Image (cartoon, rainbow, N blue to C red; front, side, top):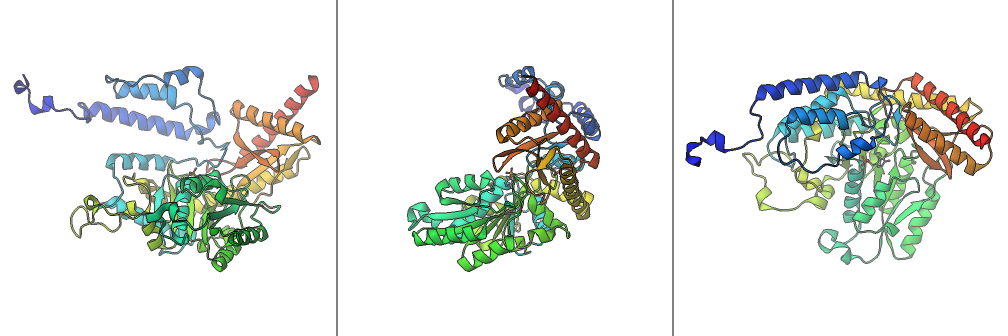
Length: 493
Ligand SMILES: *Cc1c(COP(=O)(O)O)cnc(C)c1O
């Protein structure tokens, strides 16, 4: 039977039979996506996924083809209308807002389908070039090694893994923690992001080995308390290995005294890691870099490109000041991956020796493309613009007697609440909680929340290149309107 068929009929491929049809669908998709991005301001800042759509999105795996046209129709109906994080008044968590150029670069990378573990391929050179741009832009030493990763969490993991292996004092790679002659301890302030604890746990150190040091009134690590904690652990026979400094905490955007931590770490022979997931981005601007003084001394630095640099999700970066220490933490030998001096397996670097992943996407392309498209100066301006907008919002809050700032505005995060002269803290928390939910559900604006000294704050994290000043006027107007609405209801019941 088969002998009557040509090879072309027998052998399947994922390539389309009708290239023209797929090409025309592709062009339509591009038009639709540009249409969406151009007019995103007219959409709600957020909307929930309706129950009916959730049901559409829990169907069994398709066995037979539905076709690209049908898949795209379904995407437009059930997926596309419910994004988060693109709107000019989206200020929840610390969310990047992407860009049209970044979207195109994702498509280009998709076509190339490179796996950037090693090898003689352009993608490896692009990642090297991008890493050297980033070191330069942040003022970090050019000889540092680095790696693009999925985000700040993975970048924190990499920094802490190197810290553990370097400072443990035995061969952790071979012996594991069974070689321990004392508990390894890591220090950070109480405002530190949960990804640091996750890394400490995944590295086998245990969350009890993470000391949350108290903060001062500006939410910066208290250096005296840090020193005491380290000395106490040493006296008890434990082994302090690392201090994590914050360049921009999630709650309030506070920046630790990085230079002082660095000095302390050197004196105490500790690894100095900085979580700069969003805040390190401020170091690309000459005006804000002084706030982060000392960041360039970090032994390792984690930061994100998908947050305040607006590269499409996902991409973050881990930098390590000591390339050999970085490499020896993750290096392995495998004959099937050995580099050669010529041919396909030549190439300048094996990125897979610097992190957990072997196959890795071409994340570098979107960074490369966007930086070429816009130039660093544009990103500097956008960061400064957001910081100025945060100060502006801080002033709007400060000058309105009905509102109250709950933390100093150190960078691009503003935490405030509707106060209206009310003294009862529990009642204030309930009112502001309700204001926040109504604000999100109205689709007008989408901040998130924070607990600042047990006080519920409306938290506005401004890493958004689409926000304009008037967006903050709208926010304040809505918070006050909703606050009065909620108050009015509670007085009637
Ligand atoms: C977002 C964030 C992280 C985690 O980064 P991801 O990219 O979400 O993995 C860590 N620390 C801080 C301060 C952050 O804001």
